[in-house]
Image 1 (cartoon, rainbow, N blue to C red):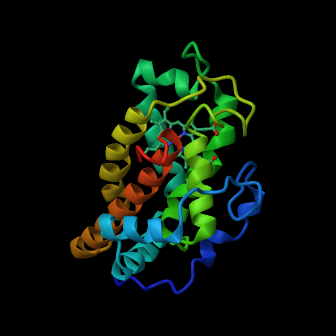
Image 2 (cartoon, rainbow, N blue to C red):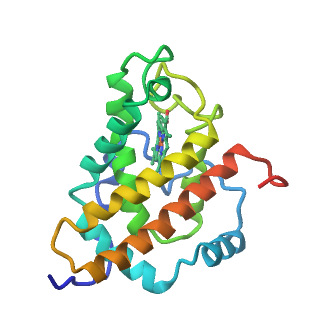
Length: 209
Ligand code: HEM
């Protein structure tokens, strides 16, 4: 299959305002403590190039209608681990379907945003917001959820392996050549690592980070 480069990510940016709690690009999102120079340096270290950004736009077209399945698979995976259940369920580990349903569209949306959003101030701010929503600062607040109030950083980092490794199958699911899949998977890896790295700023003070 020949993949057409998508010039603009319009396929996915529209209708974002319809997602409850999704405050990307608004004054309601947290203000990032990072500068654009911090971001440029991190991009350089994670190795994200313009070629990767083109590969990510191709990936967006392939993942757009699979994001819902991807996030469902992550959640199944986390649900298989009893000690992880209190973070997305109730504090005693019993299911909290309301919380799951309320937060899922934003998580689905992240898959596409990670492939399409320009890395600018709005991006920095919303990554700070997502980081905070995994910590005592803001977890549960958006959806008024009854759940543990903090996801330990070690689990956030460790689960990145699953998000990255499992992406390959979804990228390969629409007939792209192995070379194209490699290219998109490498770019997706760099993008996810960049996101999660920026989220960890919510867990550490500036000196530690
Ligand atoms: C690489 C790993 C992870 C990724 C990519 C990820 C991604 C996300 C995203 C994009 C959101 C929605 C943020 C928003 O727009 O409001 C979110 C929220 C959430 N994530 Fe994660 N997450 C990760 C790790 C984890 C882990 C390990 C757990 C443990 C159960 C978890 C549980 C949750 C919960 C419960 C929420 C809702 C937070 C709230 O109350 O607002 N996540 N995650």
